[in-house]
Image 1: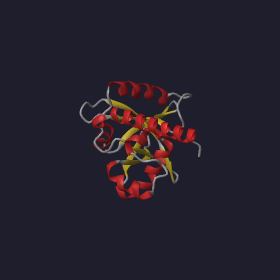
Image 2: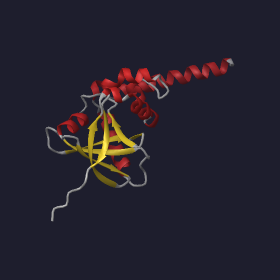
Image 3: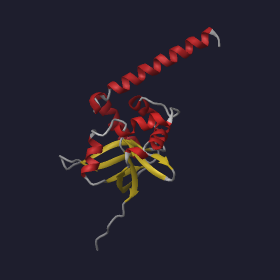
Image 4: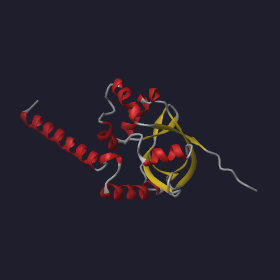
Length: 178
């Protein structure tokens, strides 16, 4: 390895650490700061659009446990063993997780221009490790919050699993009243 490539690699790692620290700072205390709230609002618009949305992106809509209003949160949908999952990169105390739990798992998922009623089933922590690994592969922006990469040993994912709720997405039939 040449001296130049070693310097470039060192600079690359320093930049990655700085970006990760900035991303964590934007969610200090598990809540987005003002610039991040603005970015999340833009993501809600993009993720719900039919043509602009990344493949794994969606908008979770759930009734607020206190306000009773619908809240919209940009999320990454993770595919694992034929099922789809949502992961809380910020842990169990974020609003969308508490709202989903208060709503008995009832929510809606808006993606690629369509909205679907869903039921979210929380996965026990001992079954989350592989899903968390897949999540980090699909959502690289979450890596600073979980502080792992998708190639980390599975034991590391087992270690962090209790602090990152995972929900399996089930379709919820729409009841039509006649």
